[in-house]
Structure formats: structure tokens, C-alpha cells
Image (cartoon, rainbow, N blue to C red):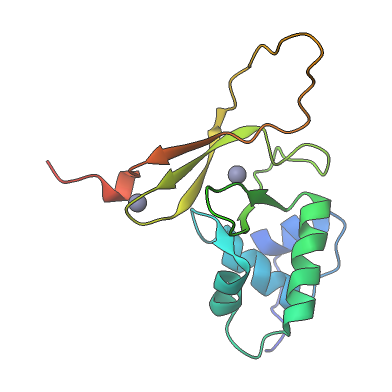
Amino acid sequence: MPPLPSPPDRITQTLVRHGLRQTPVRRAVLAAVAGKGYALSGPEIEREIGPGTTDRITLYRTLKSFEQHGLLHRVPDDTDVLRYAACSIECSAEAHFDNHVHFRCGTCTHTYCLSQVAVPAVALPGGFRADRRHYLLSGTCQLCQPAG
Ligand SMILES: [Zn+2]
Ligand SMILES: [Zn+2]
């Protein structure tokens, strides 16, 4: 792959903003996840970036580092599959996985980040302190709504 000339694109800007050096693998993984409106599992990301781009260890190391730096977050699901989605610009390394609602479509089985929908405040009884707020709705997404 020949190096891309400037000006910096969005992928470059995102990596630079989070203080990460650019590597072909990081660019490919970020492009794959950011290019979708829904969350991708590890094997799906592997498929997106194509065979030969990287080995599995580097891929999962990249995902982990992106998660720690606030570029990606894990998406909860009602299955055991771990999925990743691109964080919005407001995300930080400390708070980025639980500030918005996720939506799972039963028809296309995609899990979407509804980054514009904040997790509603929940009043807990005394003595309970929540560390994570995973809010998952399921139903039918925009694309799968029956016509008419
Ligand atoms: Zn759908
Ligand atoms: Zn999300």
C-alpha cells in the first residue's frame, strides 16, 4: 500500500487526536469500524479489512488499544458476541461505552449505536451504585421497517 499524501483525512485526524501513531493496521481497522453504522464483531472486522492486512494478535491488540484510547467501545448484546463500534467525538477514554443507547434489530441482527440518545437516568435504591449502564433496546431498525 503506498503512503497516502496529505491533507489529513478523518482517520488520520482521529488517530492524531488520540495520540496514536498511524500504522496501516490501525488505519484499516478504524476505517472498517467507522465506516459502518452498526457494531462489528472481531471476525467481521477481520473480514472487512481483508485477509493479509494483519494477523489476529495484532488485530485484537489494536482493538484493545483503540478501546483504551476511546476510539472504539464495546457494544452490549443479548448474545455473547463481543462487538465494537466507533466512538463519537464526545467520547473520552474514561467515559465512552455507556453514555448512549444501543439498538439491536431482530431482522438484520445489526446492533446500532444511537449516539444521539442518552441513557435515561435511573433512580437506584440506597446502597446501590452502578458502574456501568448498558442500555439495549431491540426491535426493527430504520432500514428493516416494512414499506408503507
Ligand atoms: Zn435492521
Ligand atoms: Zn455505542
